[in-house]
Image 1 (tube, rainbow, N blue to C red):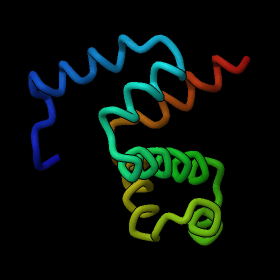
Image 2 (cartoon, rainbow, N blue to C red; image 1 turned 90 degrees about the vertical axis):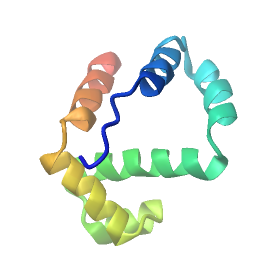
Image 3 (cartoon, one colour; image 1 turned 45 degrees about the vertical axis):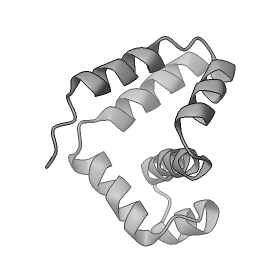
Image 4 (cartoon, one colour; image 1 turned 30 degrees about the horizontal axis):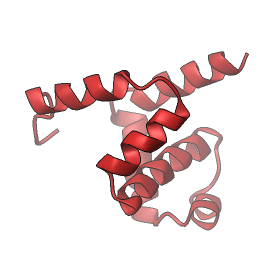
Amino acid sequence: MSKNIRTEAVDHLFEAILSLKDSEECYLFFEDICTVNELLSLSQRYEVAKMLRNHNTYQEIAEKTGASTATISRVNRSLNYGNDGYDMVFNRVEQKKE
């Protein structure tokens, strides 16, 4: 990664996020800290990642999420060559459902 994201400011942000107790608190916090477009972009990337893991095609993903092929490709690169953060979260969400 070209920029070091491990900064004190990022640590503070993550501490704040980890303090949130439920979805309602997430809505309150993220509506304050993000623009609507930023939040929708983050949620779109997450949906793209889920669909890629479910072996959907780029075309299916683009049609369902409205994501560009560039965004889909970027998410796919993160899934294949990133830090396994998506998979970690997918596994935890799936375990929580059981």
